[in-house]
Amino acid sequence: MSPSIGAIVGSLREESVTRVGLERSLDAAAAAGADTALLDLRTYDLPVYDADHRDVGDAETLRAEIQALDAVLLGTPVYHGSYSAPLKNALDYCGFDEFEHTTVGLLAVAGGGFPLPALDHLRGVLRALDAWVLPFQAAIPDSHEALSEGRLVDSDIEERLDTLGRRIVEYANIEPDPISFEGKHNVGGDLS
Image (cartoon, rainbow, N blue to C red; front, side):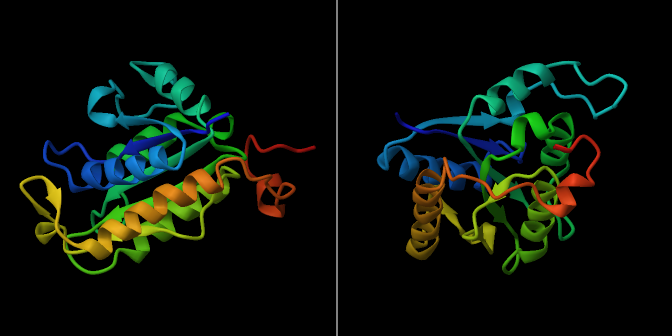
C-alpha cells in the first residue's frame, strides 16, 4: 500500500517559495510511490489559537487530514530566525493525535543564509509531540534568488528537495522508538 504524504505550507504568500519547494518534494514523493496532498494554510479558516475554543473554523478538518497521513512535510519561511506564525498556529491546533509516531520532514526558506535555527525550533516542537523527524532536512537560502518565473533555478536545491521527498517516503512507516523520557513528561503524553 502506498504511503500517504502531506505537506503543510506555512506561508500565506501568493508567490510562496515555501509552496514551490514543498510541491517539488511532493513530486519526488509521488515518483517514489506515495499518494500526496498539499495542505495550504491559506485555504483554512484558522483563527489565532485559543485553548478554550479548539474546534473553531477548519481546525477539526485540518486535524483529521493530518491524522489520516502516514507522514508529513512541514515547510516554513523564516521570520526573525524562527518558523512562521501561520505554521505555529496550525501546530497549536494539533497535538499527539496528529503527530505522535508520525514521520515528519522539514523545509525552511530564508531570505539570507542557511536557516538552521528555524529548523531546530520545529524539530524541538515535533520532539515534544513524539513525532519522528527525519535526520535529513532541506533549506532554500537566499529565497529572493531561488525562483525565476515560478520555477526553482538552483539544481542543488532541487536535488535537496527531491531527497527530502524520497526520504519521507522511505521512512513514512518507520517503527518509532519507545516513548522517550521527555515524552512521558509532556502534558497529554502517553504515560503507559
